[in-house]
Image (cartoon, rainbow, N blue to C red; front, side, top):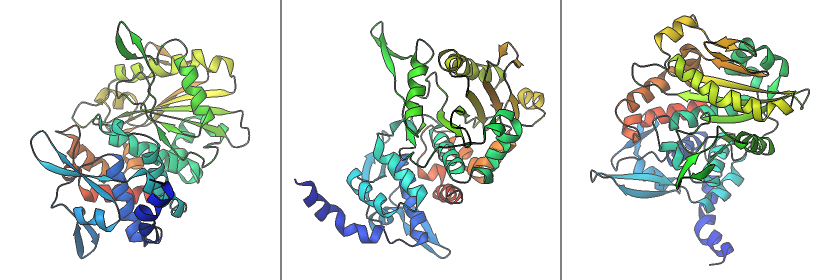
Length: 373
């Protein structure tokens, strides 16, 4: 069918309603977009609060907002639903919502690729939330960001480089990295060897994107992006974030932190930084819970290890830094209530549906993200 006719019959009737939403309904649209992006399932009888004295069935809200549902029959025969936003509709919605920066970013991510990797493991929703927060914090008003300020206090290099995203051209702000090669008839990830990091970094430099690797067990940090100096664009920082959503009593240990440093800082230094003296690399460890001895060694504060510093048997390479954020700083960045609700949701299931997470938590996430627009 002619694409113009498809637009006329399938999309055009919805556009006036979608591009003239009240602020309250914009928040609802953002929440539904998060449900679609993370493929969070909901029940037929689930409700969402739309005002202080008014609730509506989520099932009906999807229809009311001109979106679609997909019925999913789970292995236990439970029937649940997912929110679907067709790519054709996204292309027209975002034209009318360009001043709604958060919704535009979420829609562009949803449009750009398949997002199965967001619910492959317990941490994917946490990673998506942190990636979104970092982009919103650093792209427009970084000096007002508590995280930007914290990193500036910890790292002299970060502070001196006066870093920012180069523009708001990062439309597809989350992109999956999915490099594999055949080894003995099987596919395996190859981030740690040869010139993989050189190619990955080249792609990060070419496009203004935040990357989330496809496989939760890859040899890459969970989130990757670049920042450059405001006064000197030759100054560039490659940032990796290792998100450690620890929902039980066992916090992240020193050996896990050092493993992350070995697999990221060393190969990036060897393959990339040695030929670019004005570039730097930072790995940020962002854990919901640190092991007791790690917290004690850090005096319950965030800490930055710079070039030449030794962390047990690992020496930080030249032009590299390792930042370990305290639990308090992570909680402050994400939100105490949001983290508590995610911890409760992830205690027993890897891919929780909306009742586990709570629609109210998703609304809190939207409100938290909206504050950073």
